[in-house]
Length: 402
Image 1 (cartoon, helix red, strand yellow):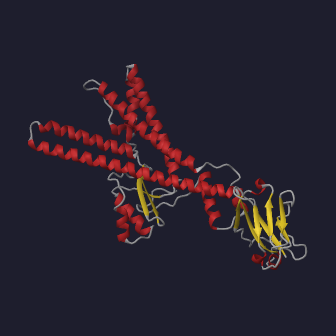
Image 2: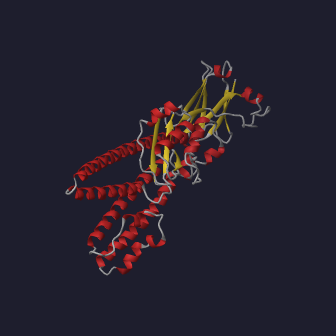
Image 3: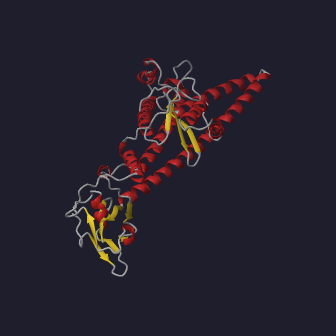
């Protein structure tokens, strides 16, 4: 994925890793013929979609938990400082677009701190800061495997504008339809350059979701919200002090409280949106898991009259050996978890009676791997799989003679 493209340009997801390779191959199995190369792709045990979903949830939760813990440590340290002593500012730790001197504030304080307990507290802050950075890199890689598309936010970008651009230009919706969908989803007021703004429109369900993750920004969305909250709280405290002497300060404080309530509602809406995203991802995981199980436990076959196969050049004319199967579509499937036999009616092959059924390739042996029985009364035939494990995920050709 290439970052730094113009705002509003949806990034095409590159499905990397065993999980997404398996997902892509599954879709190919559903929509088209199965090939030898596709079967080989299932030879190794890939990471499951459940692993990806669990890793994303776990790492994002650890980032938020470590961020909150680090903020608490900053407050604890600052409260221990005497008048005139150096304290730690929120932006000195959580903003990554700083100078080298600013980024080294924790190391500088650590080298000067004499109190053993506060020295340990600073060391833990440094450890937390490094852990957050490592987790941010890991989550950034995992986000690239999500099924949604995203754009990289630039300075001045608005969430609503980016979402509208996606719905009109990428989902190809009319403006009125796009506005209707956009009105039903929550958007954030706080975008930081480098944030990933994600989109997913499902035309079958006519549903749309959009949300924001850190991307290449210098801080997580949670850290941005915390910084904004701290700024609002500081402003509110100042207004409360001024209220004792000025009547206008009362009105300003009430306005600030209303702003905080709005922010609370926005955070609650963000939680609902994330829960919906979680449900959508789990639904996709369940579907992919079922498709994978079907592919791994089914026998795919093509049944056709022997004369027709010879006319098409699939079988040789003399000994009826396999000659060329490039044009054969293995469009029938037998789920070996549910059944182990295939019934063949002569009318399906333009025959009055079926006299023989050959299973190709010829290395499968009748009587050991499978058996064939013919009905004199109906002229039909039944192929019975004797060793289901041998045929799971395989493709065979049934040559029917009359």
